[in-house]
Length: 389
Image (cartoon, rainbow, N blue to C red; front, top):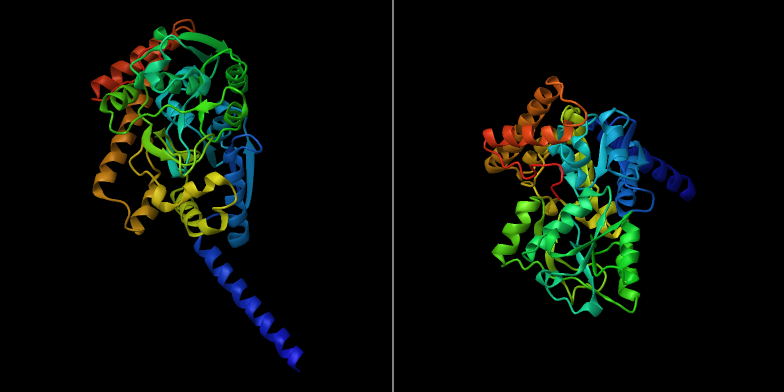
């Protein structure tokens, strides 16, 4: 009889748990399947997406399909085409919103993107330098060999921003072209160049750290107003941050510098508000279950969200943040300003396309039209010609 009652109690407990989960699922508008695009297999962005997917499966029966993309276009194209509802993307989110670099091409144009949530981890973005060069500041890079990665505007414009921190431009350094990110970092290890851009936890930076050259990350001092003013003129999305993770970086040896959130979970503005609301809620509620799945997953914590960043939040996410008492009138005003900027860009693009500009002059004339429209609306164009960055 004792065994019988143990079985009965176990069954009742299981049924109660199931009913609770079913009730919770009924309250959430997540559907049975969901698709995200993300970075390649094995990357921190992909791993974080998979970990969140497990929580969605465990609690709501959602099957999350994570579609890996090797570059910015292959991550955003499925979103635009409706093949995925969300993308765990990087800083190309900002370039796509702005319609610059590869998104200035005829098949793209500025996109109406919205944030759902973001991961703001313990690493930084920076130019790592070969320690054997004795470089201590970004100003010390004058005359040094700096890599430029063909077809990688996110890398090149970020490199330009850190050069600007030191009061430098591309004309003050020796530019060395590389075909890709890994080739660039191999170039540092092999002595072909003296510095390269990366997230401080990126794998190739460990190779430099372990090499005879060693690695050092010059600071972007938070009290250096000139450094930050110059960087923000190049890119507006970097924020001051003390990193405690990365090559030659630790709690005892933090790096005073800059970063931006990665990955950024985004959707198109037209995505269903209830779905976005409930996804943000699920990511928040089950944070403790996936926060250790990847070193960067700690960044999804609600207290790490940057609500006044450079891309607007989706109205569904805003509704959830407001229900937690985290959303203010000032944030509302900031978000609406960002949405208005997107509207100006999309109208300018529509007018530009209707004008029937030839393929040869499309990009240059778009940058001119873009700058004119943004300036007239009271916004800073930031990039005013195709070769910016």
